[in-house]
Length: 279
Image (tube, rainbow, N blue to C red; front, side, top):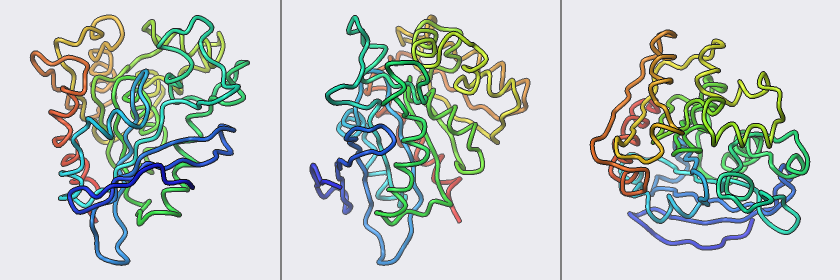
């Protein structure tokens, strides 16, 4: 493990680290904030999955999470959004919504992406083991959140591994990728044409197929330019209503899709997670 950078913040340590991933076959970079804590203490872990075009750096630099994490005693982990490096396939036209920076938190089965694009296994298996082995993490107390594409990832991973994640929340998530252009492009490219294979990577479909969590928290700006075409939170609301899942969907007046929006409501989400990570 290589330390790319490390800095003290709110009494804790904000680090960026790089390691050789066996899952993706590439070097992977992630950030982790560890609050000040008593020697020997084990702390709960909040995972944050980022959106299209992002790396670990976006939330690390603009997410405004450290003060709340220091107060609440939360480790905050932010992985990258795709494998990177020489030989890693990208969108042939260089589009922002597929390929590098747009791994969609799936294990690709279609060439040429299947070789490296295994972000589902990277997040849920390899990086999870690293966090447990190398940091004072209590892996019996984990939660997950994300933004946009990362909101999709947080919802699908949280619904699939409900026994592992005590809380799941999202900022402006892609709730039904099978029904929107971003998702159709990504799922076709990574998983192929069989829409049945897409369902385990679609939060609305997972709920329709029986996946359950006690509660979800979603914040969505009503001035988000992607709201109507790509995000469609009403589909999640309808699915949760039918399934009896306690969804708190907060439409935030005047907010867009940016980190100005995310940073405004980050502390709310962290406190919501912390309440569910106690004990």
